[in-house]
Amino acid sequence: MSVGRYFLYLALTLIINSAIFFISHFGSQNIDFYIGIGLTLLFFTIFSTSLFFLCLFSASSKNIYLFSRIFIASIIFKMILTVLVTLILIKRLGLLPEQIIFPIILIYISFTILETYSLMKISKSDKS
Image (cartoon, rainbow, N blue to C red; front, side, top):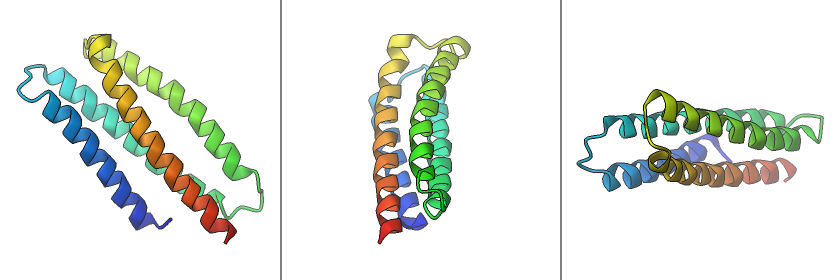
């Protein structure tokens, strides 16, 4: 997968997520919710982009297991960081768990789909 195509899919993922959450809460006076969603999107954008480039470079490695190990480790690391981000948003911004859990799960799933698709393309393009 080319870098340009990845950034196109990343932009689409960000636009769709932003539209869903900012339109669904249009007119809400809770600015902390918007800040929380923005920070969550920023976190997932940085994480996904870092993972993409790390796997892009590891796909051409002589170690045939490096790509798989990075992918597996990133799943565990992302889960832990997602829980930490959620706790920080609840404690620091004073958001209610019911208010932020569902949006974070949807963002997590959409970025996981992006990561899985892009990494599958990287692993297939390396073998051809």
